[in-house]
Length: 406
Image 1 (spheres, one colour):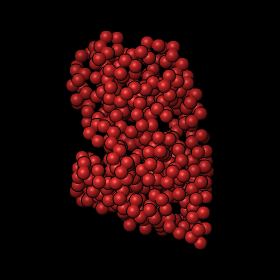
Image 2: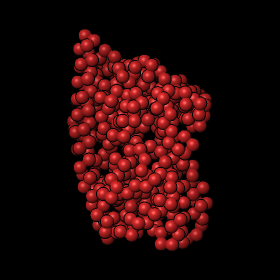
Image 3: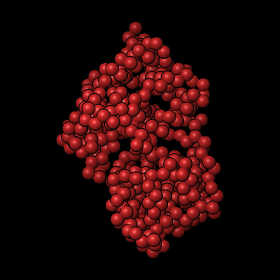
Image 4: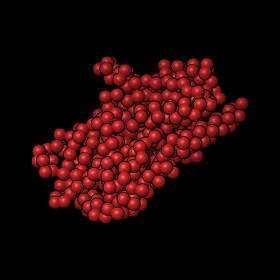
């Protein structure tokens, strides 16, 4: 099978899960003998150009005819079976799907977030879940609140993109298959207007993880890994640890972001504090530290796509404590591979984690369960079978479409 993979890389200064997933799928397909063509752009191309770059990105976001023309040329010369797009924002634009019109190439889009209907990409406003644009199938709320970067002006290109591609039928007519990361995301986007019958669920995978460490060799610590931003609920987690006071286990915070200084001020400079902030670490070092932990905690206040750190925790045999929000309850099963708590509730976070921490045998059993679940759902081979099946469904959809046209 010949596959044309298209992706707009986010800036390399800020680590991106979407970039990592794209690169992993390229290698996955190559390792199974598929012929791969890559078409990529990089947000750094415009970021380095200041205002001119921002203007270029804004103009390209709704419809980039130049990129669409290049994709069209590739489809004509290479004749791939599949055009699989990961991220179109800001330099590719959804116009790339229109380039497939009249060809035999089936089109696939991975839904890494909610951007096709939500200007902010994450349905969240003022530190709370907001689904107004999805519920109303309108961009009016996004324009009203300036949802992208809290800027009315910056939101306009994204609102135009969303409105335009609803109107011209990009999602209903020009995409043959969508890949959602969870069943929750599938249903949310179907309710917002995507054709439900074209949405398939395929989570992320983790290639070649190390074996989990024996429970007795692990450190008495709990780990948070992620961006230090309001949407991740890291400030709520720190407040939960402050409530714990005596006997709290070490909380290792790995990551960086706008709330770091505020969190460091809350923690103070006492060497007796159980909270440690490492900042951003290389992937291998992050995995090493996660593997030595007894619990991963994710206090998100927003809908996640599929947090890759959960996949990594499962691979390393680390149970998960996470917010009862969005897709998380479909990934983390209460009492089996982790626990759930109310998002934004520091008291409940502290109480639930403290209770679980006092039951080490149960925690250890959860560690064994999560590794077994990883083997069942999140290995490269399982993921590859799902991906190829989706490709075949997309190709069948394209054949039926071409028959009707012909």
